[in-house]
Length: 110
Length: 118
Image (cartoon, rainbow over all chains, first blue to last red; front, side, top):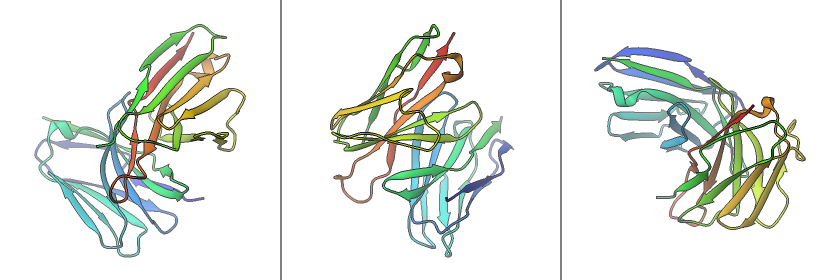
């Protein structure tokens, strides 16, 4: 079965700094999703990547899927307190199922 | 955009009680919905796939008699935790995808239900 490994598991950055979260898959990725979760709440969809080399941006968040389609990165520019939360990458397993990484807990210090 | 609503958001009840959680797709029809469980500081674990008009498909290790799933309409799936015990306390969350909307739509998640069994 496919496994996703996220790094780092937790991250503390100063407000205004850039940061990157990585998601590495044990198998080829055919659909990679990034979600954000605040503790005790649901998941908010951020971005979906499907093609090798694809890159998408939304506001200050950029996500990339590498050419070999086994790794994705999420980059936040000029971080703000509103970016704090848990970031989860998820991969298509077929039959609409998703498998998730263990999550990266992001803290932004003012 | 697609919205998934989950109710209730928080349940506290005594051991032995059965608890029903609802998951609704508000602006699209979902023939398939998914139920996940999340332990503190851990990722989401898929419990089962809820199929409209047919039996749910459970992941390995998930007791189907403990976690009853009903998907009687295209917009509603329910998860019933039967005879709940403290070890069933967890955060339960559902998701669904709009298969008819434009493009390849992502899974949209409900806000989750925090279940606490005393």
